[in-house]
Image (tube, rainbow, N blue to C red; front, side):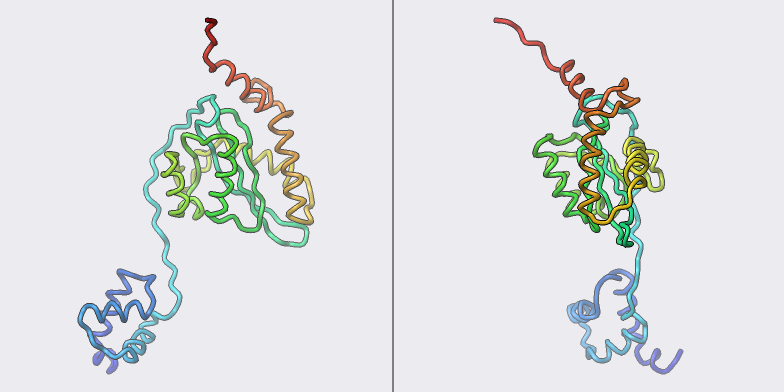
Length: 246
């Protein structure tokens, strides 16, 4: 053991213990914690040992995902039962990357939103969902992957407060979100790979018009070859209670 390590053994033990249990804390948080536990080492000494231990360097820690149970893949042919969310990415002509947030109603295969921007954090996802639920109503559940936007506490709290169940797929199993993955392939083939976009507004304009055609005009093989809005109207009519004459 070197001289400094022998002399500062107690400090080293205290800092390494804090570093192991609270790796995201900063130096002054460690100082305050050590003060609260009765240690009175000078902050200059603590900083010297802190740097010798290389605790001042950025540290990346991977957050362990919780175990995800296999979710039922049964699709109930009713609107607002399960919505599926997923992100896609592409590049403008000038090299600027952008993302899209795609929201699909699984039961009727209807596209509810295609949000386009360079960044789509959890707050933006919540805002888009609020806009959609304002005119559509809210789903019973949302199917989604384990992206950081969907794992954010703000997003989970928003869903829990509204009684919306979150059906996370298992990591590395995109086939468990099959409806939106199938939609993504179509969107990629008919829009993202079909145009050279020069601006985000151009992406938004073309995507909005394509979404309208997809919902209202394009026959869907899984819906008896009728468009999603037509199928939703048929399903809604069949499920509506019959009026009883007085």
